[in-house]
Length: 406
Image 1: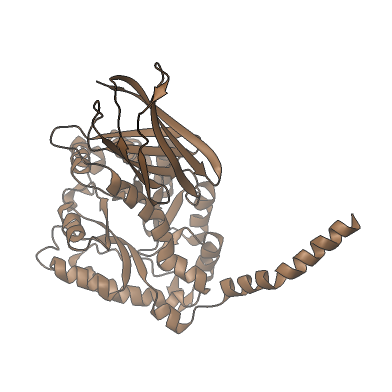
Image 2: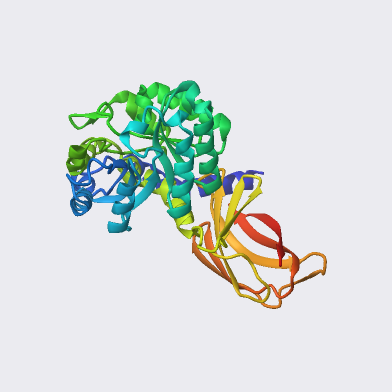
């Protein structure tokens, strides 16, 4: 026993200097040079119909690059503005689908059945990482149109970008407990109230768009500092270009944000500047890009397979046919966004005949939780079973789906 304690003591003394060094690094304020070079993720940009003629696409992209944006979550009224920017800067723009066909829909969309049709049509034609920013308050969240919007976000695995009060946030999570919600403007709530809601909902993030209170004169407000320290992975920046002239404010806003980020430890400043937004949005965007859009012949298909804490989206540009090579895109979402996901194997078998394929498919891992399976050759008609083997934080997980090859 004494020997075991002595070994443990020596091990602790050996590890202590490096542990203390890591803590010191985490708490070290960002230097002026570090902050000036910080890339920014701006999660609240609009390029709506009233801006297109006033601020051309090339000008907007130049403004975003001048601000050293690493990504820009863009939504617009109508969606055409988002698609124009995404086409001009695909390396920078992450599209979000706003429910509004024009600014006039802001007050009426939640009671307009045509909005659901509009969302469905756009989701068939284009790819997105989120739905929003939408304005939704109180009991309106339980109306049929917002409920359909939540169902569409669930079907497509998208983030919800909600300009909402606390009541509506609670109702959205009641409809979909596994939703990922980005709370626009942190609800215009005080930081202690934001912290209380975040404690209840671990899948709630907040943007700080149009909030001047987190930082003033290069100092971070004490209440916001406590919120950032309690939830270092859950806050991100945004400009909110709700009028055309505010598009010109994107670089200035990024510079102002860097001013108060310099008052935070370097690692925390980097989280708020871009890492949190990147961690939330890019896996969703990658999975969405892998999803096939509806083809002209209607063959495109998507399956969503469930296991405890895991959702696997399987998509293909065509339905399976006998002896025709078949390819699949596989995207994995987990209840815990930080989980380490490995896609290990993809296979198919005929349960009634007790045999599998004649050839082994080729699996290409594109990113954590994202892979492509090629050369699946289903050589007989009849019932088949697709099996996908995963590891989530090292633990084996398996999902399967039964289908018919005509």
